[in-house]
Length: 193
Image (cartoon, rainbow, N blue to C red; front, side, top):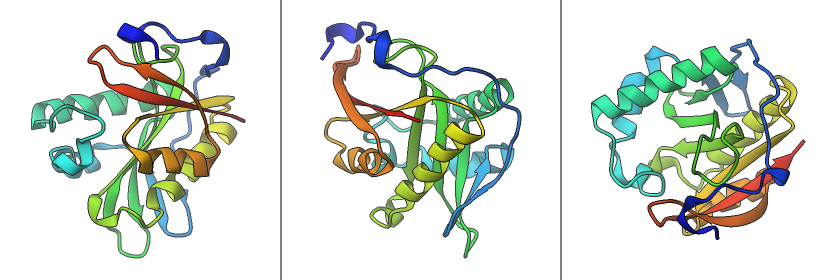
């Protein structure tokens, strides 16, 4: 654990090589992963107010203004990098189940600022059905194939064993623990192409 959120070891973390332009829908056996757009905002804003959803990622639920800021950031990531959040839609029903994302990590989070991280967030009523794993496999493959990213990272709080299991199933290896500035300890996982 690096105390005080110090910089990570650059020699083993991923970097983004170039900008990617395509905004494709990814289809899996049960899911449709749609690139983020304004049609997903209201469900996202409601979703991020659910304490069960955010307990491992934020100290408190997002109010509508903070959700809008996150939404706008997600739209900007697509414009800038060609990847970002994707709505997780159940193919059979059209139900909105959450989101999966590729995003640049940014400073003070246990890796280089331009490392690309995978994340997945599913409605609690559907936890334990393999939805996060299915979405993560598809987005991992998109990152390596369409985006040309050589390595990904995944981060989860040490107490979030379900998220760590998803990362392991998708092929990530735990690299180290990292203490964020607020004292929260996260596991840093890495996967190379």
